[in-house]
Amino acid sequence: MSRLSNLSKCESMNTRRGAPFTRALVFLAAALGPLSASAGIKCWTNDEGVRECGNAVPPQYSQKGHREISESGITVGTTARAKTKEELRIEREEAARLAALRAEEDRKIREQQTKDRVLLSTYTTESDLKLAHEGQVAAIDLRIEHTELILKQLEQSLAQLRSQAAKLERSGKSITPELKNKIARIKAQRDDSNEFIERRRMQKAELAAQFNEDLNRYRELKGLDTTAPDQTTN
Image (tube, rainbow, N blue to C red; front, side):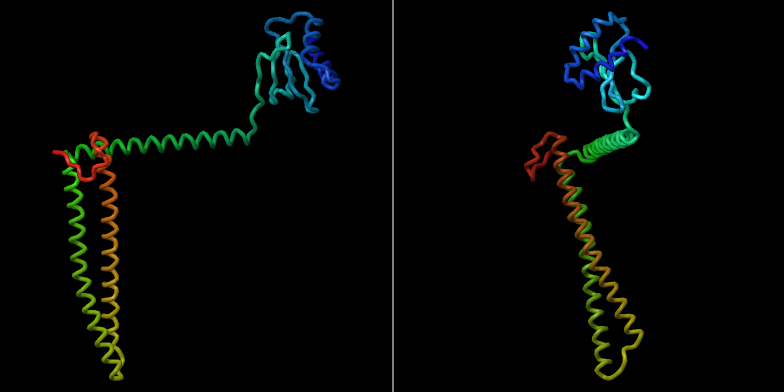
């Protein structure tokens, strides 16, 4: 072993006695004579928590990290300890998470770019966009009105059937299975019609929100004033 490895024992003694390690190192380096340019002084901590120094880190401490110092006691380099398996796992998971976030962000950007191209190629003016929205709303309103007419007829039919059932009960007769089935069928149709109307109204609200979003985006792309709700271009 090189004479420089004896520095480990000296440093341990200096640490316990409270002597400055740098001063001792300079003295020992001068006493031991010059080292070759490639031979650095490496310092590590042993299993007992004592700092040791030498010209090479022992294999059993090579994974714990060390620092390299010059003959004048100045730190010229550090080597971090090897990461544990758990640390490496966490690092990989974090890298995967960040990669997924970047991929999702890229996907959203591409999706927005596609929507922008469709928006600009489909509607030449703001008026075109509004007319398209009004047409969609009108179609939904028409279906709602038609279903409301059907619903009104169903309510009338249901009232008549219930009246028949009441007459039978007042006369002491049982409601026939056929009448019961008719009442149940009309009630089911009525419930379906009400649900259909509610879904169409929700669709109108969604279209209104989408229209406002598309209109604002269209104005941004065209460089128009987004605060003017009634603005149109020719």
